[in-house]
Length: 240
Image (cartoon, rainbow, N blue to C red):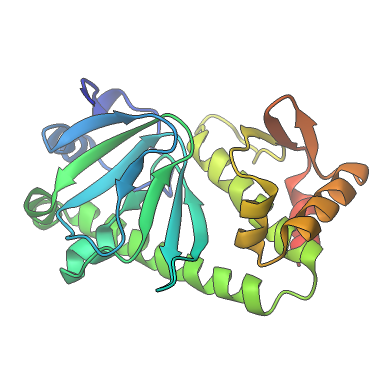
């Protein structure tokens, strides 16, 4: 559903966000495309479809998946505020390589391909941020491959998934006035143990067992429907 919103009043402008732009670029971005509000479990883009839009995430989290010919799904990563979807496909003019589905209510900015390419030509910072976003996609793909193929233990694999998610949430909560990085994060966990296991490359039973061990060790707390990671530094150490 389309809605009214303004890029100029958005607080998601941390240093690693796509929207970290100067005032003139933000004003121009305000005039592009439209904002859309999506509920949980709604598709954003579909693997194999034409790359007609770039999507900038304003709020909420989204899972990216890819599928095999026999219909099996692999959850590649979770993205959130300040991330951009469909960029590589738009630049290469190739079909979208992944599918994206909301994990919670989300607001996204949908920008038609031709408008976005003109936006890149008009502002050097947009081209620079686009390059960084594509580089981040590549880095994420490499880290996913390493986690699935090279991590030595199930605990390290699941710790890697959770610490990456924690960093994503903190990036969306970025505050320039905060002099020290935050080490605790709390968020709604919409994935099942089976889905977390898919991301980590372990079975559902193993994911459940490791999560119980993390709770005993104080690395994870469950509060109602929220997951709390009280010590991200320790969790990253566990990930190796």
